Image (cartoon, rainbow, N blue to C red; front, side, top):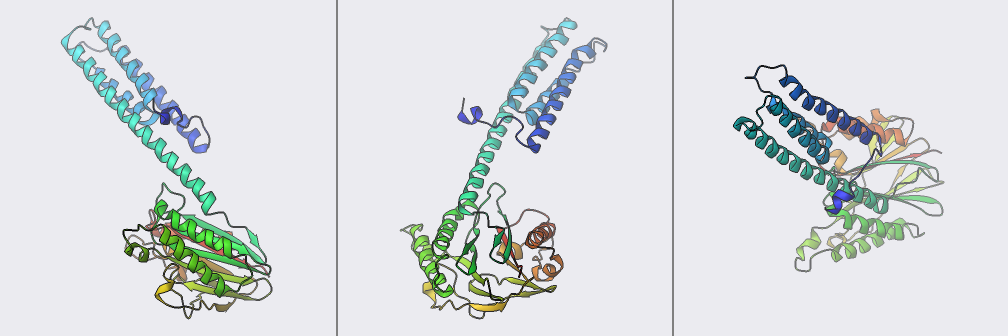
Length: 377
């Protein structure tokens, strides 16, 4: 037997699993009662009325919902019930009963094989999800809830339901007197972009804690990312190097100054929420995306904006702004954000995510990351 069958998940590890176990037991019990009812009914029905064909129904139900093992046991019980009903009528060796028996066995085998294949697929999908969750914990570490005078909250959703990490990224680092935060979007989505995500986050974590000015930090990040992305490109396809890049925004918020400094590398502008008004912090001279710095010279000069106590800052990726509704309209972040402010960043992130999913009415077309910051004083 394959290892997947030996190692498949068992038991009720959470609420959803407990509900499934109760459902499976209920379906199995109903199926058993239905199977037992067939030979009992034959005792009271006229000789020209046969209900043996009903026996395939409980086998199908149990195999589909309760798994192949219970399905096989149910099929065995159904065959025994058919034999019992035939013995009651003294018709076990008749052509009609033999055909019914052969048909029941054949259909039951097909149903159990199908259930076995489905359970294997579910187990493999569960394995992929566990791998994705482990990769997320390693690569996309949870952000701290507090950094200096800032309160922080974040949310991440992958476009692929089977994945938990993909092409969007964020990270926070502390210096002696400031908080630095990176948000970025790797070209691509899902696990296919995981290597690029790790490259960007590794370069930021290695450099962001240094005391060097923000322009030097971003320049160092560009060099590391360009080298790292090139390492993953096929040597036979040099054009692939130009197709790999990361849009990113790096922000620095001093502890003792009411400002936020922003360097944008082709990324969407942060959204400032101040006294109920939402404003996009458009950078005057954005740099090229990380990995494409050689295409245009940039000083990575930061743009500075007021950021006082009580203000909130929303950083996001295009999975948020490019989510479409049923009519094809993009999510109107600027219009919605001012009305979604709450008591803190966690409330804001939850409100934006909930409003986005209501707008999309279905799965997102791209990975989405949101980070909210609030200056407490």
